Each structure stands twice: as structure tokens, then as C-alpha cells.
Amino acid sequence: MKFLHTMIRVTDLEQSIAFYTNLLGMTVLERSENSEYRYTLVFVGYENQADGTSIELTYNWDPKQYDLGNAFGHLALGVEDIYAACDNIKILGGNVTREPGQVKGGSTHIAFISDPDGYQIELIQTS
Image (cartoon, rainbow, N blue to C red; front, side):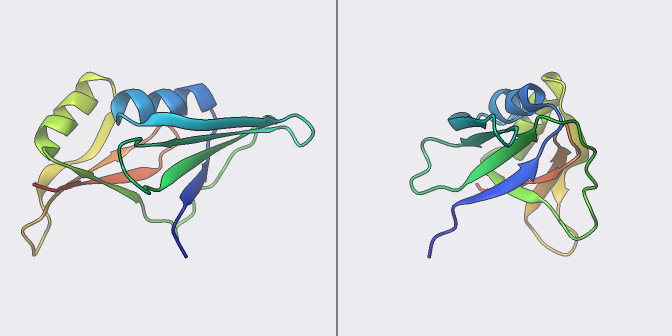
């Protein structure tokens, strides 16, 4: 088996696409619309990541409110320079919810940001 993607429901598709592409450097990998069942799927991810997973942004055309729930934790992305990444995300209007720094009780440097729908994304220093 192989991990393929994670699906999240979004309330403003274009705003979410802009967040994942402009702020996080992902690319739209695939887009499809289903007019019969009134939804659009957009897969975003990193083209240069061989066999990488992607995020499926699901937009239901009929307005809905979603509860993020308390069981979902976060998505995680590796970054070479977490401090520069967070500075850039703030410059571009993104929301850093936990400033970069060492994880409590460890040596890994992490930060958290949130997407337009409030999904938490952990950034982990990889170098």
C-alpha cells in the first residue's frame, strides 16, 4: 500500500488554492468538477517530491459550515529554514500560530501556521 493524499473540506476554494500555492509553494496537480453532485476537487502538492502525497481540497458548491472537530491534529511539512519560511508566510499575509522554536523536551525546531479554514499545519526544520 501507499499513502496517496489527505482530504480537507474548504469553504473558499480560490482562497485555499492561493494559500497552498502562494504561501507554501505547492502546485495544483489536478482539478475536477462534478456538476451532478455539486463539488470541485483540487489536488495540491509538491511536483518535485517523487511519489509524494498530496492534499485534496474538497469544495462543496452548496454553502456549508464545517466543524474541524477535536480529533484531527494537523498536517506537517518539512522546511529547510523554518525561521525564513515563517517570516515569508507573515509577509504574504499568512497566520503563524506558534512562532518557530525548539519543541519542548527536544531539539527539533517547529512552528505552526493555519490555513484559511483554520486547519493547523506544522512546519518542521529539516536541516
